Image (cartoon, rainbow, N blue to C red; front, side, top):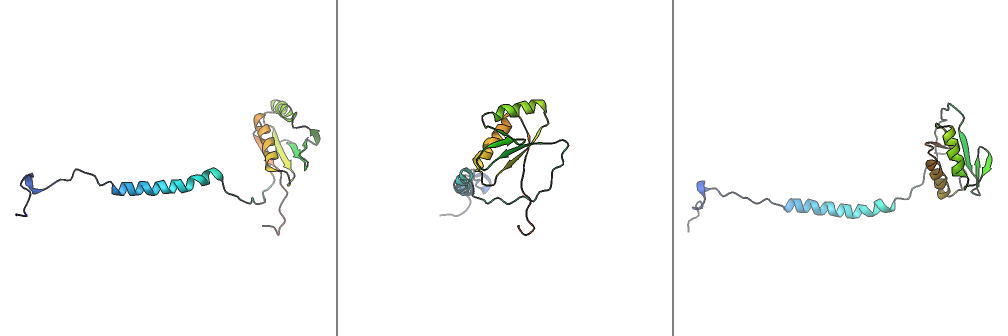
Length: 143
């Protein structure tokens, strides 16, 4: 048997017309594993301890409205008691009267996050976009 060039090909060279897909399959499998591992983290979230804020005072052009959430989840709007049921109507009327209204939300530290989120949702429904959260300044030794 002769080991020379293949007599059926012209010029003595054989061309490969197939693409090697093994590296492509390897990369796709690695990406699939990465996405399978990271997908549950995107849905569940991560538990964190939020830091205290050491922010400066806001510059104010006009007096903001103070919305206070007390320890027993009762609400005060500018130091006047208000029920949660009447809050959306009152906020909507304030928003119509002053389109650039700024509201500062002051909540007791022991209030559940859901109560604050419920008030923030009422502010959003009333089309109030300038909302600030009031915090106590940090002590110099706390960091």
